Image 1 (cartoon, rainbow, N blue to C red):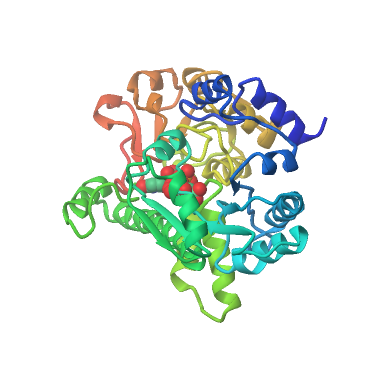
Image 2: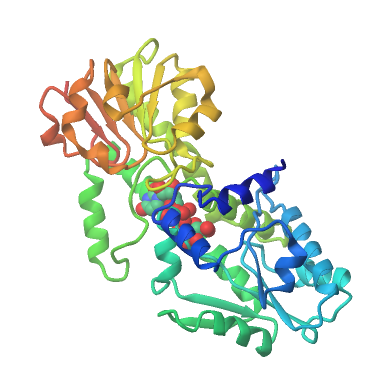
Length: 413
Ligand code: UGA
C-alpha cells in the first residue's frame, strides 16, 4: 500500500494523521455525516465538486527556494480530470506559493492538461491559509483574527469562493492573485521578524541583567506595538511555515535583484537562538561533558506533535556534541523524536521520569505541565534553563539555579 492510500485508509477510519486539538471529533463527525469523503481518486473528487482546493506542500529546496513539484503534480492531475467535465469549477490554490506561481505555473498547467480556457471554462483563486498548528480547527472555524483573503482571477471565480466563506464571521478582502500570494509571505515574515526581534532584545537584556519579561510588558503597553504580538523570547521559531517561508521570500527577492537584509537577519538570529540555551546550561554547569541533561519539549511549539525545524533538534545535537547525556521528554512528540534522534538519546515517559537524576534541564517548548515547580524536585542537580520563561523561580526554591532566557547574567548557586 502506498503512503497516500495508507493515509486515506486511516482518515476513513477516523484517525487524524497529526495531533491537533478537536481534530478527531471533527473528523469523525464529518465522516459520519458524509460531509468528508477521503479518496485517492482525483477524477472522482473533481467530478463531484464545484470548488477544488490545492493544499499540497511547498517545501524548501537546498538553496532555500520553493519546491513546486507537488503543486505542479496536483495542477496536472486536476487539469486531466477537468478534461472530461463540462461544468464550470473553480480551482483554489491554498498552498503557500511565491507571487507569480498561480499565474505562471498553476494556470498554464491546468489549461494544458484540461484543454480548457481559464476564465471561460474554469475559474482560479488564490486563498492563503493562516491557521496555526495546535489550534488549527479553531482558527479555521473562527477566522476573525486573521480575516480571509480571496485572490481572484476574475469576478466570477471570486464570487464562487466568496460563497464558500459567506457564513464566516470575518472580514473578507478580495484582491488579485499576486497580492494574495504576497500577503501570505508578508504576514509570516512580519511575525517571524517579531520573534527574532524579541530574541535579540532578550539576549541583550540577559547580558545587561535586565528582565526581558518586564521589558516585554512595557513594549506591549505601547498601543503602536500592542499585545498579542509575537514577542515571546525563546529557542527561536520552528515549524513548517516561518523558516521555509522566510527562506523562500529571501530566495525570490534575490532572484529579482532585491537584497532582503531584514529577512536574512531574521533567519540569522533564529539560527543561533537554540545554541543560546545550550550556552546558558554550559555557563551554569561549567562543563556539559558526562552531565545528564533533560530536554523538556521537543515539538516546535505546544499543542502539536510536529517537529519540523523544531529548535529542540539543534539543542539536542549541540548538547550531544558537548558530551552531555541527553534524556528528552515531550507530551506528544516522542514518537517523532525517536525517528529523529533514534538511540543517540534516552527518552522519558513523563516529565518526572526525564528529570529523574538529571544534572540540569533545558525547557525548549512551553507545554503547560512544565510550569509545575514540584516535578523539578526529581532532579539530581538543580540547574534549570527555562528557555520559555514558564516557571516562577521563587516557586522553584532557593536550592535551584534558575536561568531564564532574557533574565539576567549572574546565576544563583
Ligand atoms: C504560523 C502562522 O502563525 C499562521 O498564521 C500560518 O498560517 C502558519 O504559520 C502557516 O504559514 O501555515 P505556526 O507555524 O503554526 O503558524 O505557529 P506560530 O504560532 O505562528 O509559531 C511559529 C513559531 O514561532 C513557533 O516555533 C513558536 O514557538 C515561535 N514563536 C511564536 C515564538 O518563539 N515567540 C512568539 O511570541 C510566537
